Length: 304
Picture (cartoon, rainbow, N blue to C red):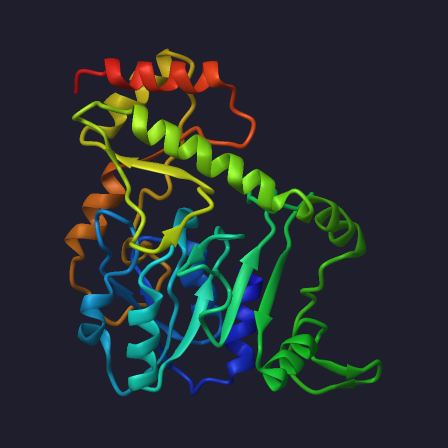
């Protein structure tokens, strides 16, 4: 969240700027934008991918729109070619929320290379996780990078002079050292995740389970393996009785969270339905073949 907030603060947007955010995302994306003084414009998603529906972006565009935050949720990536062309045409800044997308690619380009700036998370559960909270910001804009470095260190330009109202958002040395070691294994771990995810996908034949699809030209890191199913609680209880743990990412679209200031009060039926049906299955680099077989056979026994 700090990485997103610092990025937005460093962009020095006008007060009450509008920021387009997919409705299906962790609430931290919206809270970060709100903390930077922006107003959230929740956008509808594509049901098959969980990513922002790029074909509807014009519906959310106003004279106050300054930023769009495509969220590479689950490690998937939306159609960044379209999003970047649309943003350039309308003079909108692209800020990638790549918190879950370490190593994910679109058109053989890794997440974090598409926007003016991108934010990554190093929360322990991420594909590249630290021992505790942490994150990183990447940008090719040297002036923006300079402002971010100042903002993350209380706004100080030297030990005795504060230039901006900043915060203490520095990554400590212990976390950095741990991440340097884990970084060496990121690509190999991602390859194992992808292989396991593709095997699970191929082995699930249950008509009541819909596996999310990657956009064309996307290679996900499969930070998560989300599926859609009606009567989610019933299916989750079925798996739980078989000692298969699952998680929900996420059950509430951002426009239904109470603290979020939004512009459009309209319902977003696809996002709301998606959040009611989504469930994350086990998928991690060190799953044994017998665990994959047990998982998929159990899923295929489910009768709906």
